[in-house]
Image 1 (tube, rainbow, N blue to C red):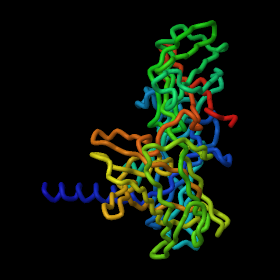
Image 2 (image 1 turned 180 degrees about the vertical axis):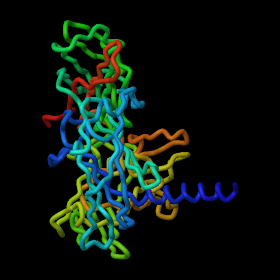
Image 3 (image 1 turned 90 degrees about the horizontal axis):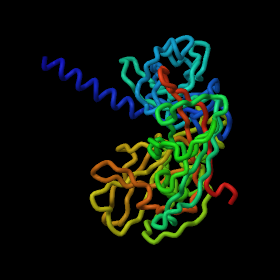
Image 4 (image 1 turned 120 degrees about the vertical axis):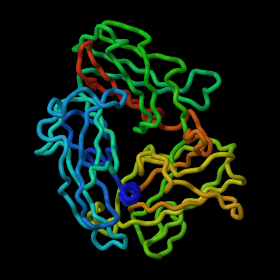
Length: 405
C-alpha cells in the first residue's frame, strides 16, 4: 500500500512538472490580429502550444459542451459533434535554429474528425498519455440569430465617475420567440476577453416587443483600469521596445525597463491590445517554430512591500492566471519586486496585479483605475427555452470605450 501511495505521489509530481513545460498556448481564429475565441459557429479555431521537453509526446484534445455558467451540459457528444469529441494532435514540428529547443503542436477545429454542430460554451482540454488534463481553454460559438447593441460610457455614479465605466446593451430578437426572458435568457458581460472580469446574473430592465434592454446605473459598472504595459522581443540578440539590457546565458535574458509604483498616478493614453500577445521574430520566417525563447526580467520599484499581498505579472500570455511563475519577490536592498518568466519571442501586453490572502486579484492597486482607459466589452447572449436541452448562444455584441479617440 505504501509503495502504491508513493507511486501515485510521484506520478502527480511528474504530471505537474510536465504541465510546467507547456508554453505559448493559443486558441484563436486564423485571421491575423484576431485574438478572440468567441466566434461564429463554423469558424476555424487553431489551438497551438509548445512543449519545452522537445520529445514529441502524444497529446489529445477533448471538446465538451458547457452550460452558460460553465457546467457540463446535458448533451451527449453525438448531439453536438459530428465525428469524435476526442482525438490525437498529429501536427507536430520541432523548433529550428533556437537556443531553447521545443516541440510545437497544432490542431484546427473543426477538422475532418471533429465538426461542431451547435452553438454554446465549449471547454477544450488537452490530455497526456495518462489521460491527465494538461491545460484547458474556453471558447464560445455563436449564432447570428439576435442583434446586440452595446454602449460603454463613463460611470454615472458620483462616487466612481472617475474610476469606472458603465455598460448598457439592447438585445433585438425579431426571429426568436422569448416567452419568459427572466428564465430563458442569460447574459455575460466580458471585459477585454478576460473571463476573470465579467458580470452575470442580469435581468432586463425594460421589455419591448422583440427587444430586451439592460440599462443599469451601477450593476453593470466595471473598473476602468489602466492601459497595459508592453514589450517586444522580435529581435532576440538586440534591444527592442522597452528592453533595456540583454545577457546571453543558457538562453537570452532580456531585462525590461523598470516600472515605478506611484499611488498618485494620473492617466496617460498608451495604445494597447488589451492584455493580448502575438508571436513574431525577425530572425526567421515561421514564428511558430523559429521564434526563440527569452527569460524576461520584470522589475517593479516600490518603497515598501504591499502588506499581506503578493505581486504578479498579469496578462493573456498565460490566460490571465495567477501562477508561481508569475510571482515577483521583493528585494529590500533594491526596494523593488523582481521576477523572471520564460517567454516566446513576440509582442506582449502585461500589467501588475496584487493578490491578497483570500486570492482576490486586483489589477488596479499598482496601475490605478481611470474612466478614460480604452477597453473592449463583449455581451454574450444565451437562450434556453423552457424544456430546452442546452444554452444556445444566439448572438454577441461588442462595445468600446474611447473607440474614437
